Every structure is written in C-alpha cells, then in structure tokens.
Length: 117
Image 1 (spheres, rainbow, N blue to C red):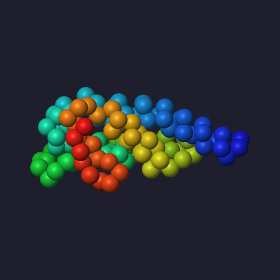
Image 2: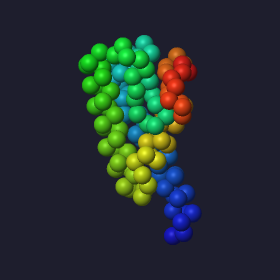
Image 3: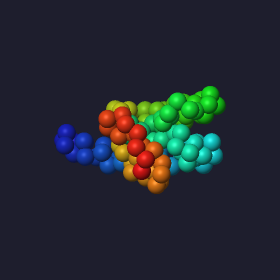
Image 4: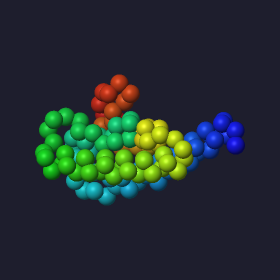
C-alpha cells in the first residue's frame, strides 16, 4: 500500500471513528450537559472537555476528568487501529465536537481561548 493511500485510508477511518466517539463520550450525562448549558464546561479543539472558568465544584471536575480518561482510552484504541497517533484521533474528534456544539455552549479554539458558540 502506498504511503498516500495509507494516510487517506487512516483519515477516513479516523473521521468515521470520530463520529462514533463523539456521541457516547459525554452524551446523556446530566451533570455534564447542565454544566455545558451553564457555560461551566466546554468542548476543546483537542478532543477533550474543559472547565471554562474556575467555578466548577470538585464533583464536576472529577466527572470531566473521568470522561476525558475514557475519551483518551478510545482515542488510543482508534489510533492503534489506524496506525496514527492518539493526538491525531483526538484532534479530528475535537474538531467534530466543536462543530457540533450547540448555540450558547463554550468551545476552545486553537489559541486556547474560550468563546461562546
């Protein structure tokens, strides 16, 4: 398989995997969804959740860390399957999650700045 074909194939698999990863990563978690609605938690471009400001309580911070750990494990698995890096998988997923964020939710861009969508 040529290098270009391998890269294109991996990109397609990552994109498909990103779609699969994006839904279960935090969907249906009432604590996270409420925190997103309140502007306390947001999606980062790197594929992980982030605390928008320092106002999160310890329980929410633990929940965000738990979800990010699960995302990391899923990214690791997909990276192994596609012969890419965890960071590449996380980035593709992060771009998808940021684009799917709802109106009024916070997202972190390339510069590390939070903005309301």
